[in-house]
Amino acid sequence: MAASEADHVQCFSTYEEADEFIRKYEVETTSQYVKRNTLNFGKHSITTLDKRRIWFEDHRGEIKIFDNGIPFVSIGKEIRECHHGPKRERKSAKKC
Image 1 (cartoon, helix red, strand yellow):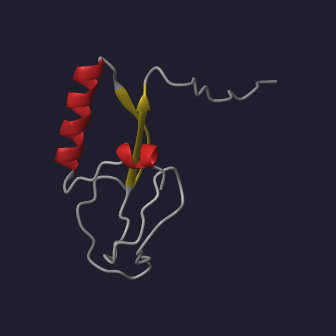
Image 2 (image 1 turned 90 degrees about the vertical axis):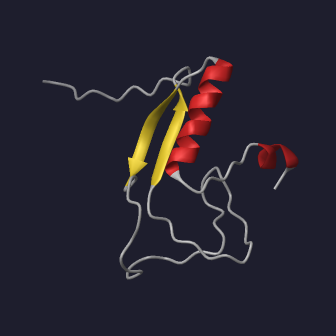
Image 3 (image 1 turned 90 degrees about the horizontal axis):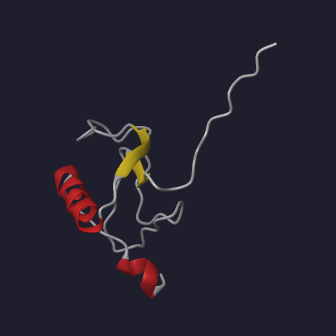
C-alpha cells in the first residue's frame, strides 16, 4: 500500500466512533458527507457463519484490507461521499 493511501485509512471498533470521526471532520473542513449506498448496514451481529465468507484480506474495492493474521466477516457496508462530489443523475424512463 502506498504511503498516501495508508494515511487515509481509519479503523474504528464501533459505528458510533466512525460517525463521530466523520462529524468532527465535517466541522473542521466545512464539508458534508451523504450516504450513497448501504448494504445490510446496521446489523451489529450475526448468528451463524453459514453462507458467509471468512476473510483474512480483501483487495476488492477502493479500500484494501491486508492480511494481519486476524480473520473477519463482512456483515454490511455503507458508502458516503462528499455532497460536492460528481452528480449521479439517474436515467429517467422515457415515456412514449
